[in-house]
Amino acid sequence: MIFRQLFDAKSSTFTYLLADEVSKDAVIIDPVFEQSNRDIALITELGLNLTHSLDTHCHADHVTGSWLLKHKINSLIASAKVINAEYTDVALEHGDIIKFGQYELQVRATPGHTDGCLTYVCHAQKMAFTGDALLIRGCGRCDFQQGSASQLFDSIHQQIFSLTNDFSLYPGHDYSGRCSTSVAEEKLFNARLGGNASKQDFIGYMDNMTLPHPKYIDIALPGNLVSGKPDKLPQEPTWAPMELSYGGIYQVSPYWVATNLDKVTILDVRENEEVAQTKINGAITIPLGEVSTKLSTIPTDKPIVTFCRSGRRSALAVDILKKSGLTDVANIKGGMLAWQDQSLPYSF
Image (tube, rainbow, N blue to C red):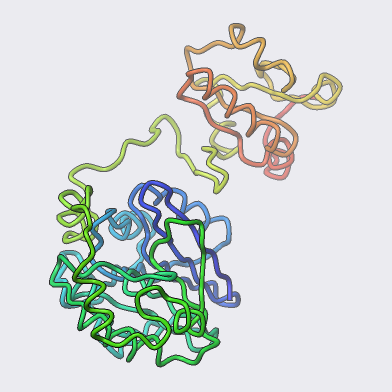
């Protein structure tokens, strides 16, 4: 299985991408609205087909990226039926199965943090994605969204601790730099549930916690009840058809540049001896090591596309230009190698 654990620093949310390495079908769990371009870039670079976007519950600390993912790459939106979120394609209930290639996720209802919490279990890989029901050495709070400490205790014991001890557990959040745990560890060491704590122990603990009101809840809950659909789409570059790399660099295709030479300034950041062998007509040449000291010599009346042999050095040039305050900047994907592979015109 292809597996990636991603992180949103603002909300300390984990997003999980799982895919069948053969069919390339994939699912994503708990995507974050602001990280949608990052997630799409990774999916694109790995050549995956995202079939479903799955939320573990109606989040109070971030808005889901499910609607944007559907809008951009046509994945299905799936969340708990009890949430009744608008634009949901698959309303999930306990016992449902989500298939992607040769793998599948079993849906287990684990209410208590909220009434719509789900845990996704991949038996083939002995993995469970617990959302906020069970965290590493903790659990989700039970004081809003129809939460219930008694119900959460039962959910965790019946649906998560009932898995074998060697199951790896992946939570919806962590605030201390921890990435995963196991059934065995949480049974022993969870501060609220471990060490044979009784339901009375747990309820007493949860009922006496003093917690601040979730600061993002007034934005997150309405947003998640419409599956993350925004009032207006996030602003993105429109001067060229763009692709965002997983490294965070906007890229344009060599073909688009070759057919729109009059609309851009091409900045070739190769060394002079490389340019002497092959060059793109009309390109400005500034070796990468000199770009930061020659910014004033680069025309800014048109968008700038950067260029090198493979697209790696020129990606750094994009970063340098962006930090200088320029906004309409992108990298030519694949550089001269891709340009030549596509038999686009250049001069010796």
